Image (spheres, rainbow, N blue to C red):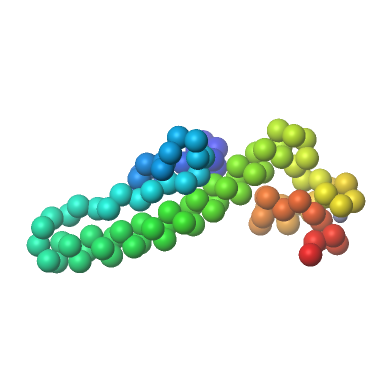
Amino acid sequence: MTEKKRLEELLSELGPLTDTKSREDYKSDFPNMGDSQDDNAQEVTQYETNLGKEKVLETRLQKVNIALEKIENGTYGKCLVGGEDIEEARLKVAPEVDTCVKHSG
Ligand SMILES: [Zn+2]
């Protein structure tokens, strides 16, 4: 399974895409565990946990999508400034970077 597919699956477990045009904006469902006060308190905690997870996953998915677009355009892994190959270790940490270490910042 691709990283994109994996992230999309994890996100859709939390809730649906907010609209079909957006590739990476999901909305966590509010959990329903029951009607007692304890249940409601647990729901809020779970919801907050899910929102945090959602944010992390969405950010990762955005980066993956950016990298995939670059692969399609043939610009993936090339420094935008000098045109040389971007260091592999750097790409592993942040696949969306578009400059080499020397030309970053
Ligand atoms: Zn460079």
